[in-house]
Length: 123
Image (cartoon, rainbow, N blue to C red; front, side, top):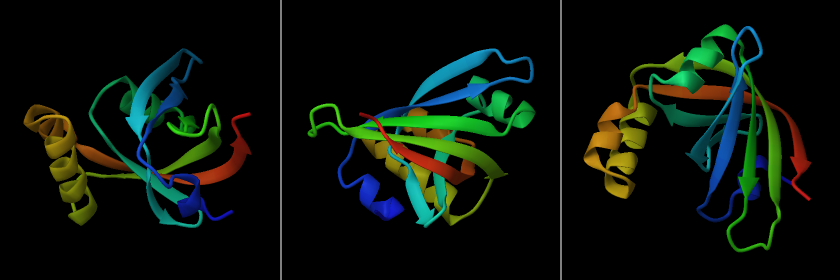
């Protein structure tokens, strides 16, 4: 299955990260922006998830499909980079402003791009 086909509908998931000492953080995120067959991206504020990724580039994303009765995906991720400007960041900020709030859109400071290293079904 192609990466873009994993997220045919809106929904949310959870990104898990850990700092350099192993302290874990989880945060709710929307579905990712699929860049290509091995790269996904999310808009990100300058919070704990961002700080953890600076110290430890490994993360995991758990996606639960809203209309599939518990089906979904687990993605193992490795941070490729952060972008603090550009078209994708502008689009994510605008989308977040429309869907969540203007304040939330303005809080998005980065696009975090990840290499997907493993995909596993949720169930």
